[in-house]
Amino acid sequence: MVIVWFLVGSAMVVAPFLIFHIPMDPWPGVVAAGIGGGLFVVLLFLFVILKTPFTTRTKFFASTLLAIAIIVSLVSWKAMYDMTHYQRFILGKIRTVIGEGIMEAAAYDAMYPSFRKYYEQRPAAKIPIGKIFLAVNKERIHGKIYRFEGDQFSQSDLEFLSDSVVTLTLVDTVARGKDLTFANFNGQKGRLQFRAELREKGVHYEREN
Image (cartoon, rainbow, N blue to C red; front, side, top):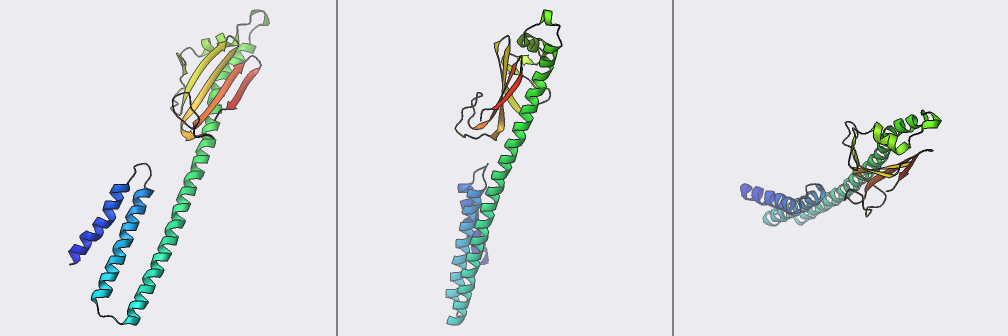
């Protein structure tokens, strides 16, 4: 009989977990397994109570303890559920702040050398800043992509609007932006996107999502 109950209990926990399991979100499977395990405990309790000649007072006392245990477990489970989701939300916010700072620094490192070189020219022979950017970064520019040295953090979209305007758009492939429905230039949705614009007067930064 013990083996039978063990098999039944295992099935009531494992089966719901496998049915509701989501690889990137363990909570649906864990909740389903918890419900299955709770039902098994109740069934086992009823089986023991009904099959064993306890007094009415003993049965009432045992039932009360079980009810208290179930309520405490549910409250603790809900608190843990809320806390883990809150931590996930906060970590997402932190990741976005870090991503924005890294992308701004990356855009600055990409554009500042060209900006400095532009103003180091002699006034009588000024080459447009867009052409200087292209010459300085020719080894890193591949079509419309600016490849950052040793950086797999973000994807970039490079545009030469004119000889005097260069834009560099970065999208973080992990961090979320303000609008989850925002269409990123790389086909993703809702990701952090940052835009830097290089002009003769300096570099302008703007968070697009």
